[in-house]
Length: 121
Ligand SMILES: [Zn+2]
Image 1 (tube, rainbow, N blue to C red):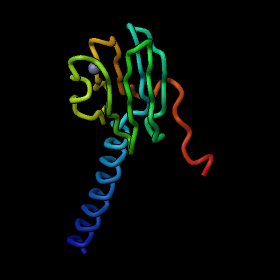
Image 2: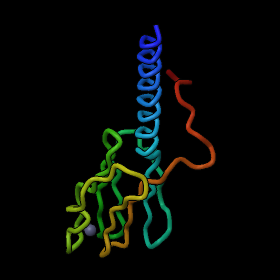
Image 3: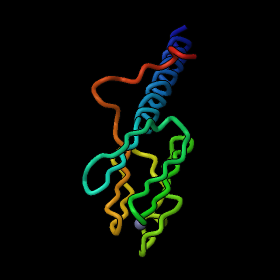
């Protein structure tokens, strides 16, 4: 009997840790994408929404793709192309910067108001 209790306790612990781990991993994904031009935020988009964002200022052009909670700079007509070659963003605090165009794309954690899940579904 004692042995059985220990096994059950361990099982519960594993499930609890598993759920906790899932929640933490999920939270670290981040919740919105902040796009700034010349140091000023020009656009904020939810990370969960797949979309293509095109930034055009005069002849400067940047194309940002949000897909499956991953942000990529897919295209730009800047001279160094560093932003296009930056690794896709997945975690909070990571950024893609286009220096020639003074554009930055940052994943920000959820703000003071938590996103409401499951209301529309
Ligand atoms: Zn660039």
